[in-house]
Length: 401
Image: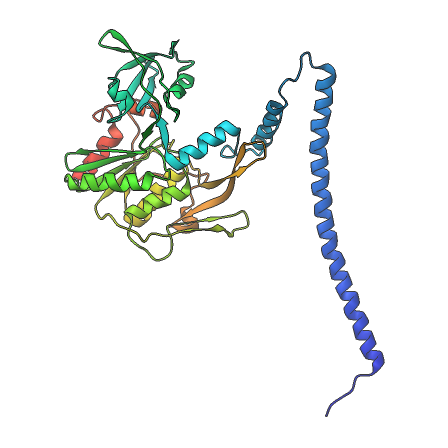
């Protein structure tokens, strides 16, 4: 039997509903208000501090502020540095252009690799690329560079002078070098595209060095792997020691060249709330190389190179040889700024194929076989001959067994 509700009860229920809705709305509004007020307060303090410094400088600085843009850039850099994250950076317009150009096309220069020998004090050419301006100018491995653009090379300035050997502008750089006691001067042109992949055959073992993970790295890698296999390689060594450049996107592309198609994914990146960041889920489905692998790693193997090593270990059973990696398992993204610069900001955590248990951020990746260099100096790695490189020799022996 239907029961009718009196008008008084109906009105009371409506009032109660309105009251409850108002109460909930007030609680939520208060939380939002408190958050806004907190942010405004923090921002106000920041602006007040900057304004206070500006007034002190204006009144007491013994000098003049001639370049306001330099001050603004320093403020931006200081703000990002204050985050305490070594992987988040402020890039000025020039650095921003160089960074994006490198990601898109790799490194440009005269076509050499170099290293500073801290024991002898020599700045040594460790590799000259085929058909490069450096090769055409007559430069060879083990030549000692003594001056660049008339500036003598020293331990204090070699890293700054080395930058002159790189760039995409079609201009020459003056290189003075010594070979067998004789000094010569050449002027090779910049603008040569330096590959991120190099390789050679060691008996029946292919050796592939990956210096960075850029847009063209996957195609270069695939070509080199096929070349070595055609030459008779029955196993492969991948060297990512001292490798940190590039992006997670491009590292995943290289992994896809090697590992078989699998269910699930080879990596996923998650934001601070544990959600997938901008649909960044990486899968393997394109190709597959089936043979034994060893990956060489060390304490300077970082970021995208760590994802590469971790996935090859977990998907293709690659053996890792060397020392524990750096432990940078985060993704960075570029945000352009109105001043022409950009902020490279850590935005997400990288979760490799092994899931949460395989996350290496802050921990690094322990190799299956721990081997330290005889010299104990990873930074002198490029100065070692294959015979002196006991990490490489360990890998070769493992694959030959």
